Image 1 (spheres, rainbow, N blue to C red):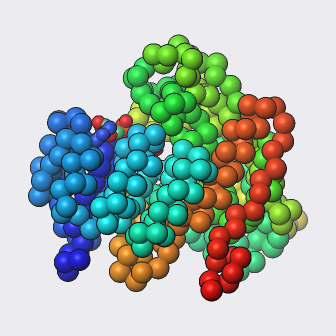
Image 2 (image 1 turned 60 degrees about the vertical axis):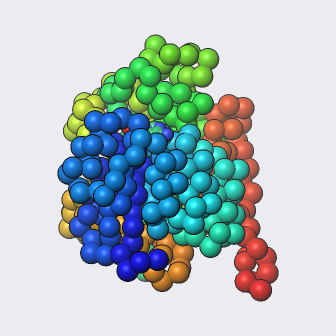
Length: 358
Ligand SMILES: NC(=O)c1ccc[n+]([C@@H]2O[C@H](COP(=O)([O-])OP(=O)(O)OC[C@H]3O[C@@H](n4cnc5c(N)ncnc54)[C@H](O)[C@@H]3O)[C@@H](O)[C@H]2O)c1
């Protein structure tokens, strides 16, 4: 590997957030940008000074010029793009969801280990002070025993074109994989990634069928669920693409409402506002525990973590083992919604767990 890390980005829509972040870090050469859409890739090529541009992610990877890649393709292309990258000896940072399901995730984790390449999945919110500091507060016991998480993310209306992959089950879309994952991961991560034991969910496709080319493959447009953990704690979440709500506009233009809260025996935290509340008579004590930073900062910290984990040959913060447990939870929720029953979740066991790294 040369002194600079030669980085490629596949997918120039959400890829722009990563290009902006990596362009601010010393020792990174923005080597190649790929997108089927010429206008999008040329825009990033010109703005961030990439050395070359490519039409497909395959031609970017085959160019033999990369040390690392950021995959920002539609979710059903993640596994293929990741395995092609590992075959070409390239480290991978992949957008959420890290995979479409647990079996894809297992193959990704095994091939990363087999090829000796770094695999990290992206969730920039984990690098926000509201989430990062809350995780530290939980770990040091400031909230007492944490027993409950609650999160919701509702969009007012569907802000995408009718052929957008998010509306199709076959293409990795749906409210669970697209937005539910954010709610579940924020709570689970701040709780310290406890072992999940059971999941229950219900989902609906009430609106999306009028917005997709093939209603036979329509994804769910809302999902509500509960996950129970081995330590006795539980989380609830609610995610909707068509919530008929008013609130701040997302970067796609739809109004949204979001709430993420964690409850412990000594206090509760609001992970959106960055506030810690301790209720004692005569009135509750509410204090801010985090100074907000911009989303652009979270992307830079995430990019730095990816690069540091490569240089230090260590597992990154958002690693494959966590991805495996997360996908197991999402699979169980999807199965529960389909079969209308609670679904048990088996423990994740790696060879290291079984044999102590021998
Ligand atoms: N972390 C977050 O908050 C967040 C937010 C939005 C999207 N995402 C994730 O980012 C990924 C991309 O989402 P998006 O909203 O940018 O989707 P998008 O559909 O808007 O953009 C995907 C881009 O990939 C390009 N593409 C498709 N096939 C290609 C190929 N074979 N070669 C090269 N380019 C190809 C398309 O032309 C398109 O520009 C998804 O996995 C999504 O879940 C994450």
